[in-house]
Length: 421
Ligand code: ADP
Ligand code: CA
Image 1 (cartoon, helix red, strand yellow):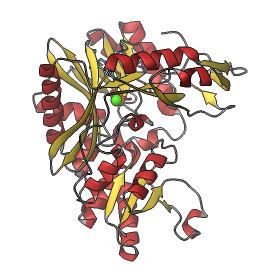
Image 2 (spheres, rainbow, N blue to C red):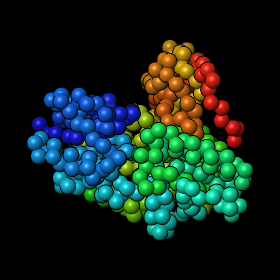
Image 3 (tube, protein in one colour):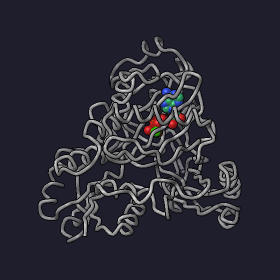
Image 4 (cartoon, rainbow, N blue to C red):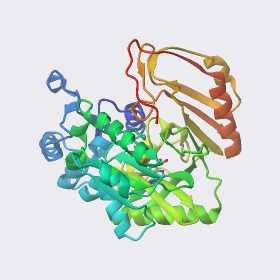
């Protein structure tokens, strides 16, 4: 039986999807994780403990493991694991993204530089290093602009500023996010810096792809029908297939293909976000892992294969089961977070599940858990999955289901207040 190493962080949303996919693919899975669990190493067949913040060391540990237990594939499940995963795969001669490619997806600043050099439509951008005086920079900028950490995901710390005062407030606010325990360790050399980009107006779409031998196979293009204009950029609905004109979709694919090649993605998943306006297709972000959170649940291929089964097949160097999406239209809603506090309960689940087209609802914060909105938050409240004959139907089902749900969130006693932006 082939053995696949799945590299995931302890906060991953993707564990169950990958483990189920490994089982369905008939491969044995071994989990490599950062969980500082002293016992794990003693448990035969238990998870391998790896320090993803020291990718060379993690890759060395994986190689040592592979000498005893040969590995047929190494798969980076989460952002924080992609560099170690690429290094280990390279050392073992297994198909994966190049190390440089993985690195470019872990630094939004590196990514900007590469895409700009490639000649793709690019916003003006600059990195404000930790400790630099932001005031003269604020005066020199054009507005609106977007400030963001270089290495986080899910729009955490991404803030639009329309003028100097907002810039200063956003700058301070992101600084606080980066000061949170354990945050900066994840981001490498530029983790303390803040990237500033021109704000790109336009419609946003996401593309889910599989790169095989350097060629991009498009698995789905998702529209994001809710406007994302800031100041914070909460993601909500994703619906596929896209309703954008064929010509625009072809331009999106071309742009992402060029971007993926320019940064050095070779074998593995790619998830990219683009904005489309009269100036063309603007690649906003590229990740070298699958779609965020549990959203891959919205995708099914061929005779019911999951996205993760395709990724596993590619990592093994075998033919994926299918790459054409099954079903008519499909969508997922990342449930918007109404406010900060403790989740006390959710009402209306039965009614929401009864909405025509709704497939499932997954609340991912447990009762009693803390719910934190953007820009500070980094956990999803939950996901609604729905399908329909048309994208409009799938979208409508998501909205109607969401309207049935009521979240009881109790403000925390003495909760920290953030200034309004
Ligand atoms: P993350 O990796 O945290 O998701 P992104 O860079 O993808 O960070 O930004 C999150 C969202 O913020 C994007 O999907 C987009 O809606 C918005 N955004 C980011 N940068 C820009 C920009 N330069 N212009 C307009 N919107 C942006
Ligand atoms: Ca993103």
